[in-house]
Length: 86
Image (cartoon, rainbow, N blue to C red):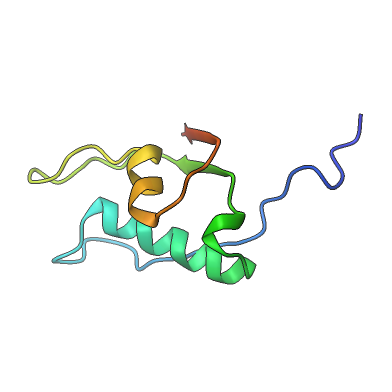
């Protein structure tokens, strides 16, 4: 069975690294995703899946960042959500 023309990871999004005052875990996720979408030349409606890598500990004043939360803030309605870590 070939996966050709069935699945693609097509964009990469980077964010600043390290402790950056005024930034939340969610803001880094959203920026990385928005940059990846732009890098891929996609529109949000083109995205049918979202996999977030790694759970970053939330700051004391914020909740857990989940793929569902990221999708919600990005205005996505994916049919597949997942979270992975090494």
